[in-house]
Image 1 (cartoon, protein in one colour):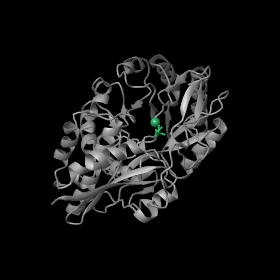
Image 2: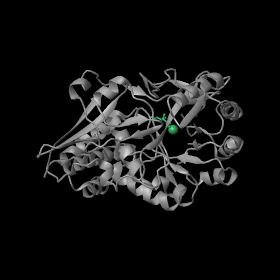
Image 3: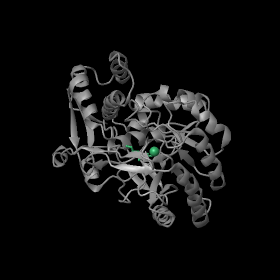
Image 4: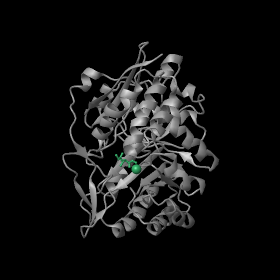
Length: 402
Ligand code: EZ4
Ligand code: CO
């Protein structure tokens, strides 16, 4: 069996997605997500110009060998563009293998470890009252776990607090918008938010929060400590993690569980925080971390250090990525939770899929492969539009993290 054709398809049904389609000489095809928010065309060119020519004629069943060929063979290792390109190939090959075996991908990964993947939804409001209303909506929809973000008094706009509620989209068309930030105001506000949420919703619902890499280790330690009475499921991206050792300081001060890794690309990015048990949840996703093949290795390392998985699942990860995550989630033993943001109706129509939500859980379905298809005709109606994540400045104008 040979790879006969492989090509990328770009579409923008509300936001940009890059998808790789691999077709075999026996008529099977597989899909892989290659979307890197705000840098989409870089991954597309990497695939079109440098990867696809090397794939033609290869046996699509040799997933591990093709992964190593693309990783080691390039000489230039790691990085989000490279690893997203490798991920797209890898996930498409798992999709093909599932179809060949006439099995859903989770069966190839060891079968089911649980009936479904618990997900968390995104509730965000301009202030505490509006955030409470949003949390109530997710609770009413059956969510067991809800991430809560609120605007901060005295700061005009905050990343992670969207205008569009249910279909939250982090990127904006055109050039990057600018947000402003004050750590002092943030650290005073967040404990008040979670105190109000516990008073309103009680102790049962899992509450999560994302700090989007904006704190220093000692500030994160303070936040974690001040949130302990509200027993968060996790505090995400408390500190940027280029310096993994920074998490030692956070860890020694607080029992609030820590989640990290949505921007990581390889196991090396997570090595110190996992092996020193500095985090509780690893957020890496197939699309930005070399696909199912690499994420399985990350999960195996994490498992022996009591770290659970919590895959990134924002709207800039396509339905192909979400499906790949779900097959992974229900098969590995050390699954923790899955992020879930609803895609727009147009996106769901471009990517018809078998996964489904019920009672706070997502289920991948039992179709052979990933269970996701791609409507190329419909996709062609939504041409690419340049869009970026916002940038963030301190109130005095200093460029800051997100
Ligand atoms: O900022 O997916 O936890 N989720 C997040 C997301 C990310 C975007 C970046 O492209 O932090 O909203
Ligand atoms: Co995040």
